[in-house]
Each structure stands twice: as structure tokens, then as C-alpha cells.
Figure 1 (cartoon, helix red, strand yellow):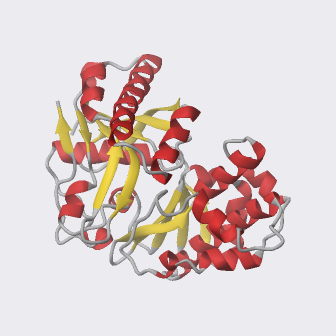
Figure 2 (figure 1 turned 120 degrees about the vertical axis):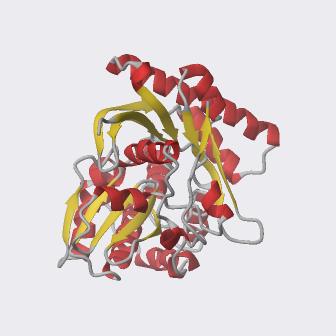
Figure 3 (figure 1 turned 180 degrees about the vertical axis):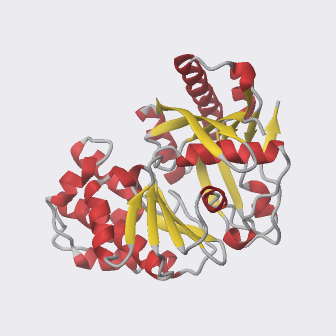
Length: 358
């Protein structure tokens, strides 16, 4: 069977960039053909974070939806021009959108991703598939994470394996007799926010700043005591839960207040320990890591040290896996194939995910 060509686009919780990929897809494979990282404007990122943390008018949310639609369109068009891609070869774009709020629990669960797909259609001339979480939630699921179904498609399932994507939020997939997956907790998000505030850097490259600090175990224990970590799966979370206000609340109880560099080191340990705690529950033969956090050398060292009996490896395409997932989800939607997620999200049934915009 000949490949069909899809563009996948992912803007994660960290908002450090927009990942755009071109994939060749058929029923059994997803081949990465080209990739591109589009800048995410700092001013826009700050406005989104403020919108999440503060009460804002509906007009502000609507304006952000429009502006993100324009930004995602710009990312796709720049990618196509740079890579000299023939638009007529593209079946569709899979766009996750920028998550503003994700609340899967309570009497009125909902999720909100911004970046108007209609604008992307209008500005790129291409079909767009978006809004992948909503139908799973309509069937009683948590709507996230979506990655486990793609991991099951992509990787060898002959042995027990865990895959952890360390984005803004870290999420885990367990491949074995049963497909499992859920959000672990903070990945890069708190570390990035803290170093941005205190060192004016987007992220702590290779964990160099963190490595020079010391773990404040009192602060670490307080953060690890958050009820989310003890909550059974299925579960998912995001910036609406783990944010700088959450961190500052814990810091404010400390006297004397820890040094900024020690807080950075403690945040890295929070990510490493929360990941290792979950992986060790399943005693896998191997742990595969992806996402931006897989580029943090010190973080990977800490994770490996905490799990000495588990082989820890980094996925070669670690920076593009989630973009590839969006291309794959678009392929599945166009072909009206249900996604195997009910064991992951708790939905009543597997269902076709996404809305097609033309």
C-alpha cells in the first residue's frame, strides 16, 4: 500500500515551540519524512499563562483562539515552503491545538484547546483534523493522554515496556498484556518557569544550573505529598494544576526560603522521582524516553540512577514523537478508525476521535 502524507502539529504545555512534521502513513507504519520547529512568541506564551492563572474576559479567550490559529497557520506554511513540500500531496493536517484548560473530573468535565482550525484551513488551503480529546470525554474518558495508543502502534509489544514523554507534563505508557497510560505530573514545566524567572533562560540546558544546586528534601516531600500523585489512574493533568502559583505556595511555607538554584535542583528531583515511582510499579524490561526532557542530561542521569535495574534508552525521534502522533491521529480520523484508548482514559468504549475541518 502506498503511503499517504499527513502533517502533524503539536504545541505542548511548555509552549517552547511548535513542532511540525511530515509523515508517510499506511496501516502498519508511520515514517517521519521532514520536521521543523517553529518559534512560539514569548509574549503570546506569557498571555496564555496569565489567562490560565487569572480570571479573564471571554473576549480574551476568543482573541487567543484567533491568534493561535494564525500562528499555527504560519508554522505550517513556513514548514511547507522551507521543505519544498507539494501541498497537493497532503491529505490533512493533524492539529492538537494549545491546551488552555483540561478538567476531566467533576460534574461538568471539559477540555479546551485553542488555535481555530477554520483559520488554519483558510490560511493553508489544507484539510485540518482537530479536537481529538472531546469525544473520548463525552464517553466518560479523561481525554488524555492520547500518546499510549500511538506508542502501541509504533513500538514492539513483545515485552513489558514503559515509554515516558517528558514534555511540560510527563506522561507514561505501559505496553504489555494491557495498554495503560496516564499523566504522571510535572515534567519540564516547573523547571522551565523557575529558570525563566530567575535566570531569564527558556530552559535549563542539560540541567547544568540544577546540577550546581542541592535538593531541599523538605520542599520535595511537600510537593510529592500532593494528592494528584496518589490518585489512581486513569488520570490527566496540566498547567491548570501544576503551575508557578502551586510551586510558590509550597515555597512560602519554608523558612528560611531556599536559594533559587536549590529550588531548581529540587524541581528536577521532583520530575525524576515522580517518573521513577510510576515506572517501578510496572517492573518493565525497558524504559524509553521522549520529549524535550529527554535532552536534559542531568535529568536522565537521575532517572537512570533511581532505576538501576531497568534499561533506560532515549528514542531517536524523541523531539518529534508527539507531532508524528498528531499526523497518525489525523490519518485514523480520515479513515474513520476508532482509537484504542478506553483502558487508558476510562472511556466506555473506543471511538473515532477528531473533527474534520474543510
